[in-house]
Every structure is written in C-alpha cells, then in structure tokens.
Length: 166
Image (cartoon, one colour):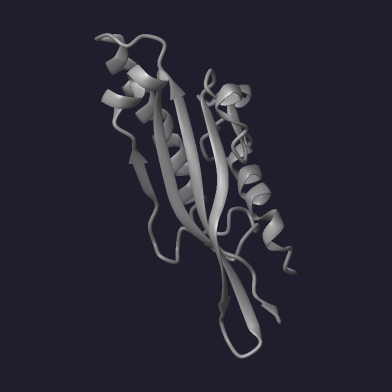
C-alpha cells in the first residue's frame, strides 16, 4: 500500500472505530453500540459534554528511519472518551460507571482488531503491536462526576504506518 500521509492517520483510525458491520463489536449507537459519537478530533467541551463520545487524536507523530532511505511513520493515538453521568448519587453513579466500563471493553475489543489482522483493515502496517500494548486510563470519578457530570477515559496506543522512501 502506498504511503497516504500523516494528515490522514486520525481519519483512518476514526473510520476503523466507526465500522459497525464486521465481526467486532459496533461502537456507535446507530449500529447498536453504546457510543453516540465516534470521530476524529475533539469538537470542544460544549459540543461533547452531553453525549457519550470517542474522539481520536494522534500525538506525538514520529518519523522513524527504518533503514537508509526508508521511513516508517508511527502515531501515538490518544482517544478521549467521555461518558456523561446524569445522576451523581448511589446507586445510579455506580451503574453509570459499570456502563462506561462495558462500553470501554467494546472499544478495546475493536482496537485489538480481527484475529490475525493487526492492520485495522489494511489502514496501517500494524496497530497496538509496537509496543504491544493499549493503555486505558480512567480519570478520578470522585472529581469528574461532580465537576463534569461525566466519566473520562484516555486510551493510548501506537500504530505504525506503511514505509516509504524518503
């Protein structure tokens, strides 16, 4: 596959996460998943605060010299995940936290990808393989529920793009 450029990395990964027709869990509510929004880039707090959402970004972007004239760009994908909590009292706050954990589990399954294919459908050379890890960090709900009326996760993983001569 030809190099498509760093400018398309976020769009390619967001497109992978938006798929609702393969054997992996669908993420978007339109396809039966739990997330209202799955898109590239953060739209701003006002637009994002009322909906469950996954917002894809990439930073840093590393231009790795694989060999003498070969370059393999690598992206550190950072997914901002927002899960609004309508009520801040027990047991509803606990229910919301469990619902968010269930939704996060579906997201992680989609990031892991199809058995035997770690390219996210041919969009990248590999995803979550170099290094072989995906980190999901939950912000403290004791802070985010009263302040933001939401749970917040950050999901971090890397993707290697196709090599090109430079």
